[in-house]
Each structure stands twice: as structure tokens, then as C-alpha cells.
Image (cartoon, rainbow, N blue to C red; front, side, top):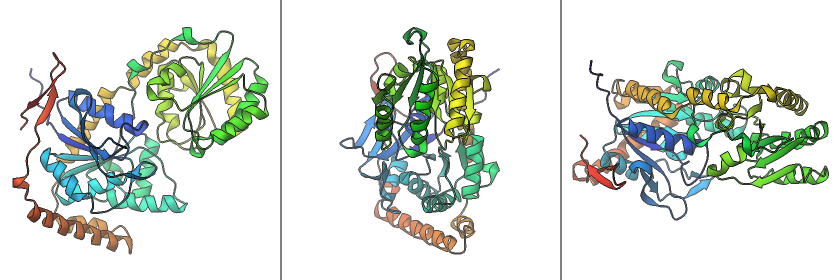
Length: 445
């Protein structure tokens, strides 16, 4: 019996965070795009320029990336312009014949602007939230209001954990039935165990993280000396860089731990496995996490994990592969002691095989495809219906949101007159030839 035809989508993924920058969001977009392309969909990525990397580039399997000549403003996010990016996003959507726009990460300015312009033009949109955010500080209040504005007009949203879904619902007031939970994944072929690389007669604890407050670097300053005092056989490997690195180096000198705490500095993603396979235990001290892809990578390499019990972390690994503790130094030390006792019962290869079945990018792509289909099946709306939702966002914010949307709508009609869509060239689609690895143009209707 023939399999029913699946609808094929033409997806524009937008985020400030993409290669050559490295991180969880960057990896997520790249691997998701590759798997969607393998399933027959057209995927294009739009991000801001990174140094001299500007214009159109092609990546693995012909993945087309638009590096928009917009320089990063703060922490790799571009300067907000509201309407400044509309002409170039409109050009990309029309030239690539996009059918759905998928924005990633609440902290991405380009993501918010692309979703707004796409909805003005009548495209269906999906948003993926990769992080948790608070409710009390000034930055969180501002961010949550921006998120409420953006999600007021998306068809579907995706979160990487159930904790993240609850957080996004509370921050944006988006109905829970519009939010899907699709976890991250890892390329398990890149993270294979290799017990032969471990130091004999020692217990090696690996830490690979940005050394910042949110990742719990201050916790490590107190946990590491106490663990070293209680367990003479323990050796630490710390990979990562950040403003808190100075505190860790001061701690190492203060307690004379230079021979037991190895500081690697920044570690390229391609070298992460080389660090992980040297260890027995992976230590995650984050104060907030929506998912934490690092502990999945560590488990794929056969490391037992010790982690703070925060955010979506308890959902990620089976209980036999992780020891959880409150983000308190004394509790973390106890958790490390428990992990050391459990080490003889850990089979690295059995752990890797289980991670391979739990987290795979083809599965993530298939579930994301379902979200796209749900989004495409939603009813089309006119401007007044959209304004009703924006107006409900608050007595003052609602009126401001409506004004921005109306101005965006007027600007769109100006662009339609200034550069009619019928006069715009359509970009050819490219697919790599498997035999030669070259790229050829093909027609896609």
C-alpha cells in the first residue's frame, strides 16, 4: 500500500544565533535544517553578518544561508529596527517562495522582526523558545512583553521541555494548546564512548560550560575545593571561557590545585568529545536551563551526570544516568559523592545506545514537520482579526502593538508599489548531487 503524500514546506529559519558562532541554538537550527531537507523540504536560514561573512553562503547539502549585513549589537543580537529589515526579509521570502517562517530564540531581534513581517505578508509562522526567562527583573519584564507581542500572532510555538512550555505560556499568555514540546537532540555519531582515554586510578570530572553566572560558575568555586579535599583521587577538567574564569583560576591557586584542576579555556564544538571521553562524571552547575544539551552529549559519551535540579534538566536523562541536587554547594558535593559510588555500575556503551534511541534529529525533524502542517492548516486572518489579539495584550502595550502592526502593514503596501512581487526574480533551488558532490539547480513547484 502506498504511503500517503506528505505536504512539503518551504521554510525560512531566522535567528541571530547561527554558525560560525557556536552554541545550542546554532546546532539546533543546523541539524534540524539538514534533517528537514532530507525529508524533502526546502530550508533557508537567515541570520546577521558575522565579521566578513556576509551575503549568501552554502553549507552542507546545499543549505542556503543569508548573512544579512546587519552587525551584532549586544551578545550577538542585532540592533532592533522594527521596520528596517522588512525590505530584505520580503525579498528573501519572495525569491525563495517561502511558505512558512520559523523563528528561533526569544533573545533574537531578527527572529521577532521576521515573524512580524511574515504575518503582515500573510505567511504562517512558528516560534521555538530555547531558554527560560524570569519575571521579576527589568530585563525579563521587557523581554516577556516583546515575547507576548510576537506570540500573539504566531500559529504554533515549540518548546524544548515541559518546564519551558509552562514558562513560555506564563510569559506570553499563549494558549497551551498552541505550544508543542519537542526536545533537542544530538548527533550521536559524533559522541561515541572511548573508555581507553580515561586516566587510570583516577576519577575525572569534566565541566564544559560558559563560565558565567547563569551557568553556576560561582557554585563551582565552592564545590571543587571541597570535592578535592574529600576525594584525593578526583581530577577536574574545565573547558569553557567567560567572565567567571578569573574566579576559578584564583580558587585553583588559593587551594594549590594546579595539578588537579585542568583549565582548557574555550573549547571548539568539534573538540568537545575529546574532552568528554577523558572523564567519568560530567558536572553541570547551571542555575537555569530549559533543556541542557550538554548533559545529553556527556551521556552519549558514557559519562554519569551530576547536575543542579533546575528548569527542564530533570526531564532530560533517565534517573539511573543522573544525580540531581539543589544549586547549593553542600548539596552538590553530596551528589558528586553519590555519583562516585555509582560509577562501577555504569556501562558507557549501554548509556550511549539508550541516548541514541531517545534523542535523534530525524525524530525531531518529523515532529517539527507535524507542527508545520498544523500551522499551515490554520485559517487565514485579515488585519482586523490580528489587531484584536494585539489589543488584548494590555491597556497601554496593546495600543502600542496595534500601532506598530498598522505601520508595518502600510510599509508593506509601499514596498508592494515600490518593488512589485511580479517583477522580482525567483531564486533557483539547489540540491547536491550525491555522485560528485557538486551543486545543481532544480525546479520545485
